[in-house]
Length: 236
Image (tube, helix red, strand yellow):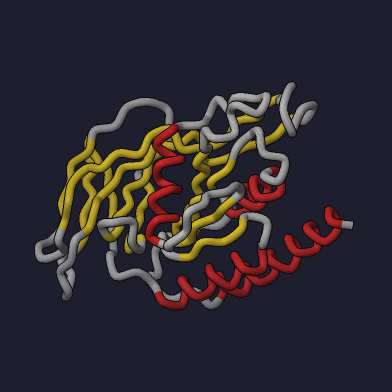
């Protein structure tokens, strides 16, 4: 019964997401959806599957951040990084929560949602698509260099410019723990998240990046202190 209800929710959420796309604000930019998940968590596969669906959307940037606090329960997640756990704890601190859990989604750095509640996710995405983003990031390739720019903002603030690297897809056969016997598909698996610079928005942003390796990459602008994600662009 629970499986049927979750699948029904995914179907309904898919319809709502389609409506959200058709009503998308001009220049709304990429909406970042972070999923905190683990290969060792029996509740996570439906959320992982939902994230897989989001990779088909061109105005949504879904990212899977595998956490390490499930690793001691029979199966060590080979995608898990302690930095991801620290990031999730920082979001919890901002929200005034003392606990963290999986699966959890964070939409645009502000809305925290249980990862198996697709209707709530659809509602959050529609809100952010309607509102748009204040930072209009662009990325262009010039030979081996990628040039990332954004115009100055009317209201200066404190922002962090981050570079995120991720692997598009991996399949994992899990032999122990809560998901033993399953082969699961994971998408947009974050492998590195580093801060490039601080930015106030008072002057235009201009960065020259030289990247190597097979991973995909995005630049994200987020209010300092784990506030809203105000801009994002995938690098060519």
